[in-house]
Image (cartoon, rainbow, N blue to C red; front, side, top):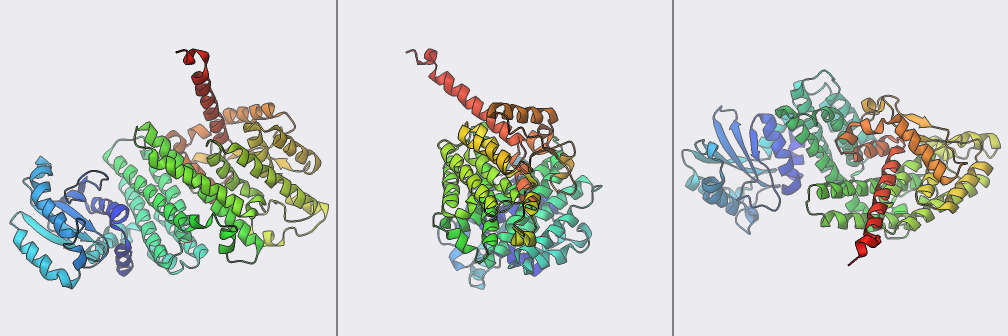
Length: 580
């Protein structure tokens, strides 16, 4: 296990990876971290600063200068990012001028912190530098990959803190990275074991959060090495949801352990975002190529291509939704928004290119692909200039589905398991067709967005489809109920409710009123922990990951935001405002 962890550490980058892990590790050891990695501010050589006692029992200040991988000759004294200038800054500037006054009387260890090993070629230079600059109260020490791996193994992964059998699960998950479903299955079992006990103490829950994040990082770093991120992407979603299940009750508290748990959850969220971006770094270069991603599936079976492309569609849409959330958060705190705005524009353009260049995205083969389509429309709809594109796409989906249904082709069905999809349509008789389309999320979802976007032609087309082709089909929407809060993070029991009396036969306005009345009558959505805490995209992660229908309530929020935009526009354009 130690060798696995060391290899993982050596693969981490200095910024955003190794320096994200270390504060949690130091806290778990028992040190108090008083300075964390920062962006845009000068740190005078110190990446992380902590105070406390290690094995010798002596309270000290630990000033870490973090470098990735192995430390070689080119990393010692070449350029401003090399080690020696950083050490000089710590000694010349940080300690005299920036060390908090309450720590000035304590002995200081300047820690050369690397994920790998120190090359023997620079050992004489390092030894000479250490001898020249060490004093009775100032030491320069080495924290290499071996020491960090031993600490991670002891404080994050020790047997008495993990459920029995967890380490073999991590090893199996790493060994099967080229078989993503099997790799993810073992990692999911690991998460269950780490987070299983409900009667654990606050301290044990904090340890579990940190362990899950470290294991996810290990999986991701190995996945990156073998150039197969599928397992780590799925693991990142599952880890984020399990982490929220542990952390959610602490977000309204202000104790020391509550703050540590909140910080650890946010570290897991950062890890998820890093893995998400790494995944799309592989995908996005091909969305502009006709059939580019369809070809990359490497399967002659059209079902395989269809399933994978809708999977990518949902993931990319969710990436856009998270970026929109980041933009809204930045605006709320009056921070810079340009990067998020550019990222949203880039993701929206790539999402539309993905759809245009991969025609299989016009022909869903199973009804629950309405989830991925809903996520895409939720992301695109608030952005200017997308309404016509959305209506065209949804109209094409409906037209092709009806044609396939009439021609006994591969029309959207209620089957979800792979063997049944391979056989679909199993028969061409009317009994089978009605059984395969007994219920639908897809068609009412198209009707909903037709009504929201004020497109009467598309809405009437859905009404006609229901009347002429699917009178037997139960059009339905899903929304959370009182049990959802306890189960949505792990999807470990049935929850939620179905609105099955969808009044699609009514006009669009009456249809929308009936849906909003149903949402407001149930009112469980606003009681969800992630909604209360402003982390609402978490529920959409669960929707995509567990194949839960996107709650009707999200479109209600879209309607409210549209109404607010119209009010603002009318205020700006009113004659009173235009008087000079």
